[in-house]
Length: 355
Image 1: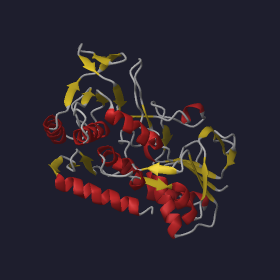
Image 2: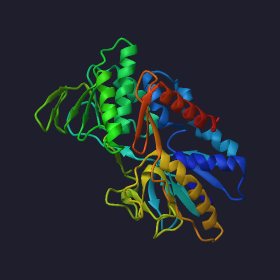
Image 3: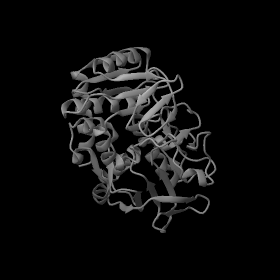
Image 4: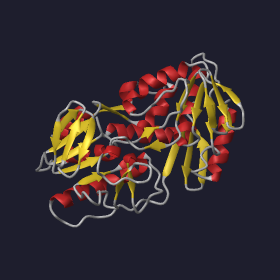
């Protein structure tokens, strides 16, 4: 095999689209744990009941077939970078000339007997969120974009389906504080308006039906959804690849591993050495794709590689329930139904590229 793509994240989806438009003269294989890649940008809409399952998923096998790429459903469990081999959960060994990882990240969990759900890897999202929406006392932990969006979407669904709208959010810092002060102020008004209770605190203990925070508050909780930020895949931990202090695959600005230049990576699963604080979100994965694809081909032809330079600001739209959105760009934060309609248009257009 010449090129192995591991994972169906944003960057690799872009590569598949390019190959579909213009075939390459070497063999390409995509390995993914699931036939379907679910688009996280539409998770909030699905959670609220605005989208059906088929509207938020991409059939990787079909996309690969259209592009002339071999699709393999398997989970990679071991990396032998020096000998250019991968091992799958099926026991199959995959040889490669060049490999790229775009497998995303995972979410942390809490100790204790409290029932917790996980929405990563993304193909488990549907079943997990269906049970969380209906639980008696749903609690979301995390005040970033993902936590806020899921809390508001669950609250909207409960309101529309005869369940008590009693979603609680626990965050160690003000909601959306990493975005901007204006976004944080605006989202606090929105969540209060929509009846969500917010505790700016941290969890100290968990029991079957209750959370106890560091400040001593006792919070009823029948199910917990932790969205406290990305954590590294365990796949890289047992390899000889260079990792950052948090276990993410460390790549250079060329998106390749320094000691093994035939290993590339993009998206949430990597940290770029020259931009260690770069947020792990889909916006940057999409922006990395042209550099990743360009450098893969430059490497295969023995030419100098180019560097990825991230933009300083990026547009983001959060779905905040009831077909309303919060538009942010730098210090700008605007709220309204028009923002959700814009997000819907962008998301539908993105999914249309893969049909």
